[in-house]
Image 1: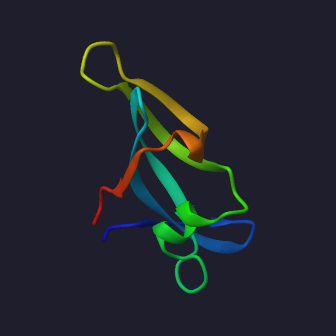
Image 2: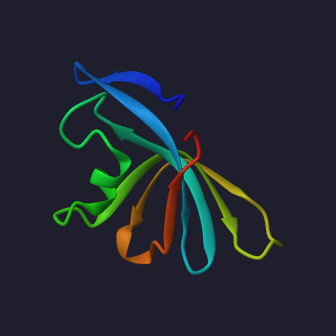
Length: 91
């Protein structure tokens, strides 16, 4: 896995590139995770019951089925209720 590391508020975080499929879009973005230990796996982040949205950095949003243009955003929050499929791209 080629995850990028960055410091936020004094604690190191790693960024993992993830693809999310919703009913209408493919959303690809970076999720920030702890480098190790508690909740350091992508699946831990997605399966947390107390979190309804997943924050994403460096995001590309494309319509499913082709057509249209790919939108790019520095930051979005994705509602977990709309996610149909999710997988890491750097695995």
